[in-house]
Length: 214
Image (tube, rainbow, N blue to C red; front, side, top):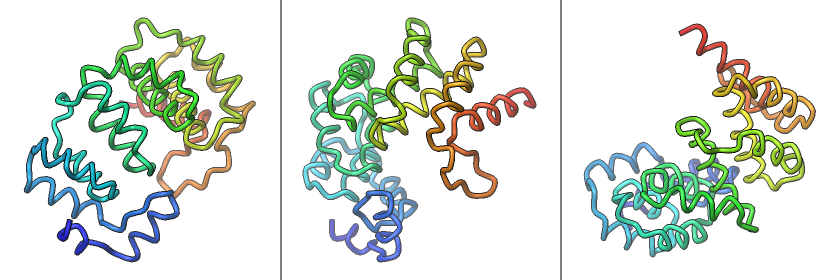
């Protein structure tokens, strides 16, 4: 904890605060500590219990993803107060855990929009890698009905799923683009040069073009 405190950078904290995060540690330096520590599951659990965002991010880098029980991960997601901790928990840990599908189904229908956004993130992973058994048309129906008025984090996750369906599944591409164009979610999102806009019609078109050029 003392070492993490020494890595605190006021400028980094200021930038992170704009995204809802409450730590000031440069993530490259945090990853360097994780590389040195290697995998340490018990230390990871102790770091998580501190409720400090930088410590929790480090915990997610040194933990053993498959070692967590289902209820433990459910509790951790509900404790993950900030976007970065939430994203790393889902992407670095839950996706690699044997309970991922069970949690996907539970979270997808959760009344808490932040928890539901994790269910959508796991669904997006399946859209890309294991779509068999998913009702893609049904997902598009839900997105069409609910994405426009969804809270920010949930809206972002649903939009990602919309784009992924359009990118990966040619038979649904026209409908995915049409939904994006009508709802206009993230149409005006500020996008740096050489980055792809998160506006679904642009995102889908750009990624499909890249795939075709490979």
